[in-house]
Length: 530
Ligand code: DGJ
Image (tube, rainbow, N blue to C red; front, side, top):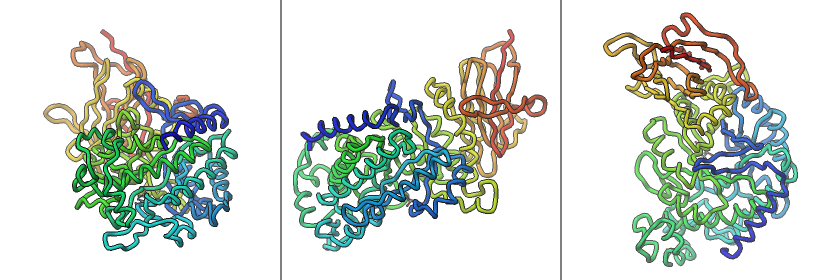
């Protein structure tokens, strides 16, 4: 394979050149990552439809609903069983329908390749794969029972999966190579096996008895060498499965990339789960779990981004997980998150993080929209975020790159968050503001929904975006005058340009900048007379 790599990379580069300029790509500049779409940095404000919604009849009412949600990117599965119902017979009609629907509704697509793996199983593989475990071997348990998951050791499986992905990518190049409706491809879904910690088939046992390859030791900085058990002890089954799964991914992804090199990502079911830690049961065994990330990077370079599915509502584990996947060799991307108020709040913080490509809420089905004009719970808080952040995305990315963007989110017992800028200090106050010792303070919202993004546009000018909050600015400590408000404009961005709706004065600004439950975008100018 090592000898094949340069050839595949050359073929990939060539395919990219042929696919036209300004292909979507992942860029790293001054240690910060950006997804570049149509030549510009792009922030993913995404929504993923349900697992089996990627069919024309299901999508028809969903497209307008996705517009109401104000998502800019929709994640939709493409099913191996549908794309290749018989070996070497391909049906692109469903994919073509997705492209048409997305274009009509001015949305970008991330296509999710539901091939060998779906949540540690093989439910979306074609029936000719499911029916033939001799050719496409399954993982076997310690007792020799077959699990409903393909073994990563199965060469025919990765060859067929890679060939099918390659067909899909060639087709995308042909029908979308100029338009770039599809900007990303997710390879597989939450890979690894559920139902066993490793493959105990005779072939699995043979491979498990071998010595750990040098590339694994090197990538993880391990000094001990030996068998998987000697090197990894109780983590050996998981590390062994991850090694073979990463190699499988490289085969599949490099075949796809050679046809049309869009940025490829994977979504990881994290190992860090509530309850007992039992890889293979509490989470799939073999995925790109955090401690094995450097190994995955070394073995599967055709995967550009390792994303992590992150559903926690508690901020500590949520941001802890985000930190684990945000590394110099990997941008932060959360391909799946929930739709609750807590998730909507976490999003504000994620959008402000350097190198964050964006986020996507999972399972949006638009059912709430059939009767009503606006998005209702459980996605209403996310819809508010997306309507605020989507139009401002270009400006937010510029501010973030200049290190002039900060977020504040409300937490239990944390209702007043200071944010410090060059010439001004600000405080985000959540909930009703009351006077007391120490000044005027937010008392907290009952649902802890407060969230704010503040960007310094110029030394005396700020963009303030927020929900359920009140923001107060003051000159930096030590400045001897008052900060006078020059103007507070309420508005939004249209095609990247600021559009003022009205000027706010009087009660709306006298007691701090009020950001209500529907969310508000303000552009504020101050002056500091001496
Ligand atoms: C994570 C998976 O990647 C999704 O496809 C879906 O099954 C969700 N879990 C359900 O919560």
